[in-house]
Image 1 (cartoon, rainbow, N blue to C red):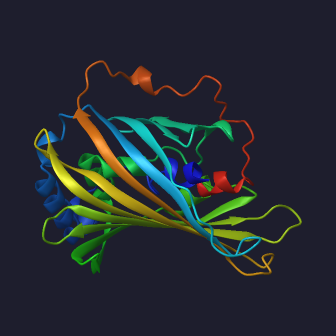
Image 2 (image 1 turned 135 degrees about the vertical axis):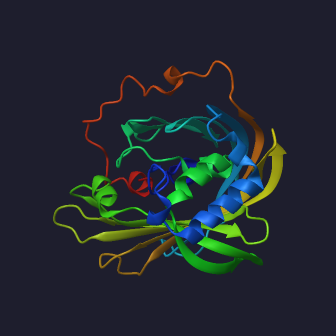
Length: 310
């Protein structure tokens, strides 16, 4: 369950080409320009071909309220590590191991895929989108995905005055990620940028999925993921976040849940051990999907872990 939700979730929207300034918020453009200046990543634009990062994670199910048996649970922390590669613009791959379980995920710019012990190899619905975890270690990715964001005002997060930018999956993206048993209703992400430092200090995204098999009542899954981003350090003259923490709230509700909503809370702490730009020897062949991947194979959409991972 931890790896299903926290392992390698995808961003709600793909990276779009930079829009003309008259088509996006001038305030949002100012915030992104402030961010690129604060991180120093502006000087790398057009020169970075790939990014490599390794790190460690600790994951835990904190509590599970409303489940059969009721009450909270005392979660046991599971420790693990990950290796992540990115090649501009849409190629990425991650291998993450936690508690003896390994998950592989990647994108070749045309298809995004996952390989998990519980579902095997399968394509991610909705086409190619950035890896959410990549935003924690790559300011160039942050600049790219938020370049077309909407400015939502100001808010204080953890005592820091922030500008708020929002990105939402459009109706076409939501339809592409839905089928006759699982409907993606919404998926939006908010980026909180410090007014003082210009750095991205908090990410918050939420998505709502409606699950209904033939002859049954619908069940709704709402997942909210909040990530604190901190410990920025210089790497080749670029400020990179080296640690943070993520909290996930999963709420399941519907008429068929007579005892009320089921709420599960997960937590993760993460650190980046190493980051490098333009690693020699990395080629496009490193991002090829597994040979056994069949885009037309039936997917186990009723598995709640798969649905949460869309």
